[in-house]
Image 1 (spheres, rainbow, N blue to C red):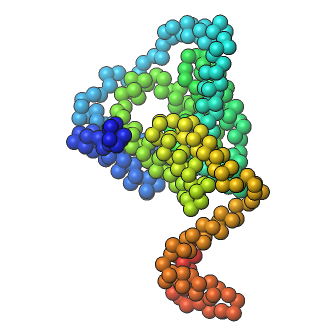
Image 2: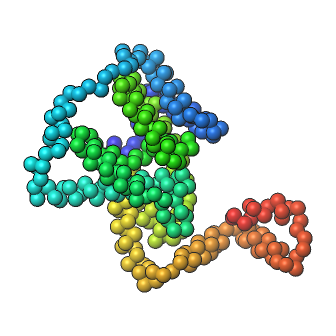
Length: 314
């Protein structure tokens, strides 16, 4: 951090930074060519380089999970002695944060995987997803663990093509195996995993193109979500600020007076603004193209065929 700019560029003289950038290059290149397992290849490559450079190879690779203090943790987690009305506020706060956290992750991942209905906004099986997160949180609390909820890192599995429940079952089996390989996985350097998060962030940013950035009613809440989430390290914070400001704009812009509007006016406004910002030569070309598309024009030149898609999308 920095007192003047809040966030500043870190030390670029360290070799670890450049190794991490090398890992990002590997991930980006392999992803570009649709190589299966590109994320795993990138992590392994950087890990081996860091281990070799620092001579920090694990002393052992397998260990028993152990049962240290398990009975004490389980007994404390299932005790109702601590229930008191003074904890109700805190419990409610955690519950709201958990709902927002699960909602944000579920929405983002469903959009990324193409499972969300673009017309209705509904997510197939969303009720079961929330139910699984609730049950997972209860069970995790009984074992003294953090809540078991969908995580944004699941985007790595989606990027590899996983979209069904079998993907989650497979991941669960690997996690069960990972319990016995804690010394190995615990020694993987952060330089190997950070490029993966950058890659996933870039992949998920594609959904921002769906936002109507010319309509401030949509753009401002979306921008608050996009900025507050990374700066506060919290998905719920971004959702709360974004949805809260959306409600404010819903009232201040008078949208509540026309709640039945289908959104066609926004699309027309977006088209008009884009047209006003185009150079006049492009507007002339588009007008000519629209005229030629009329029924009394039976022929098109090869150049119009060639540029039809380009002109239409301008």
